[in-house]
Length: 149
Image 1: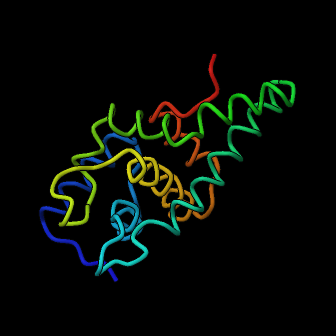
Image 2: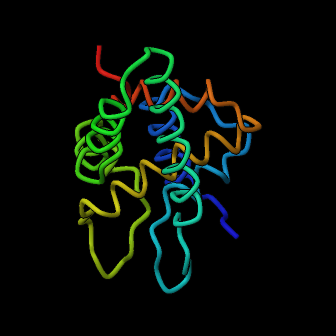
């Protein structure tokens, strides 16, 4: 179970501003920002699993809407849903300062956990919005995880 403090509330508010989404259940966001550690053994892993799937669903749906070939859709998935790209977007948007990380790692947030955090945020938005794909897509757009124009 997660309980927030005023410092945590500040991180969550910054995150909400970055992603352009306000949570009804802020504990969803708190969990999305929590990396696994000895106290929070799963951290954001379950939300990241959900978010990874939602990201792929949104990108595939958009590709089909655009009548893209399966090959083109596959290429976009390989690019936009990759851990390297997700981590890059998270760092460039300033999310590293918002992550609740493992104390043994100090203030360092590595690429893998950053990518997982972005996936977890999308998963948390999906859950918080009663599984509203449009809400998840809005957050993905705000984070630069969208079909190229």
